Structure formats: structure tokens, C-alpha cells
Length: 221
Image 1 (cartoon, one colour):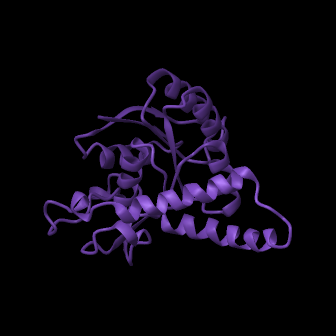
Image 2 (tube, one colour):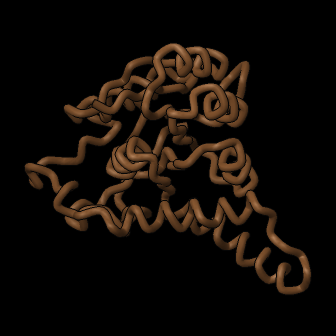
């Protein structure tokens, strides 16, 4: 059983995530937090396998909460689940110890697969996040050829990105096929119970996604 902590300051988002994740018999949401300080306290209390955090948590933000959780509960992997895709914030949470980063605009399959990967202590990043970071590191690699070397932590982040991409591409598609392809995905907007809405368009994390499903999810403003 994979035990999961959810931390988001919007209760309706936590309910949506809980509904999505607990549709899996091997997933259990063991605790919910509405701010970063509570997330750290609950992580220490429950020792979940995976903590799913938003960056914009009140009191203690997601970056600092990640740092504290990884320091005090090293067995708990941290996945960032957020609207923010700025390169600086992605790098900050990776430096803090997160090994997963998925955007709230990603499809539900990406969220589930990220939790699966992190529960096995494997990195997982959405394609958009990987591309954002790799573009930056390509620029830094060019600078390195001119005598500006990457730091040890930056090289580690590059390795994490490579690991995350490899993990997505080597997952057997059969493990993720739906039992009934005629039904819509178990998306976070099921029967309008939470503020996620469907829109047409290809999945950004297409490397490991069932091609029969061609949908994307976004959080409403």
C-alpha cells in the first residue's frame, strides 16, 4: 500500500486528488494539510511514502516544506503538484530535495504515474518541466565550455531529469491501460466535484500515456 500525504491550501483540490488517487486500491491518502507547517508535522507523524505538495502553501511555502520533510523524514519522497512552471521555482524545489514535479494542467494519468514512480524512489517529471530545465542546462553547458562549470548539485539535477524521463519511457503501457476504454478518464473533474475541467488537446506527457486517451486537464482560476 502506497501511503500519501496531500498538501494544498484549497480543500476542493485536496478532495479531487484524494478521489483520483484512492480510485487505486494500492493507494491510501493517510493525511491532508492546508499549509506547509502542517504538511511537515503530518509527514513526521505519518511517515508517508509520498508527499504531494503545492509550492504556494501558506505559513511555510512548498519549497521550505520540501526541504524540512526530506531532512526529517528522508524515507518520504516529495512530488510538487502546482500551477507554476517557472524554471527558477522548479530548480529551487529540486535543490530542496523533491524528485517529482507535475503541473496541475497535466492529465490524471501523469499524476498517478508520478506517485507510482516516487513510491519506488524513482524521479518523475512532466515533459514540459523536463524541457524547461534541460533548455536551461543546455545554455549552462555552453557556458561550461567557456570555463563556467556546472555545480555538483546542478549535475545531480541533470541526472534526476534523465532518470525521470527514462522511468516514463520504460514503463510498460499494459500496466496503465484502462479496463474500459469506452469510459472517460478518472479525471479530477469527475461529475464536477472539484474545480478541474476537461479540454481537448494532446497530452504533454505523451511518452508513457495511453494514446487512446486524448485529453488534458486544467485547474480553473
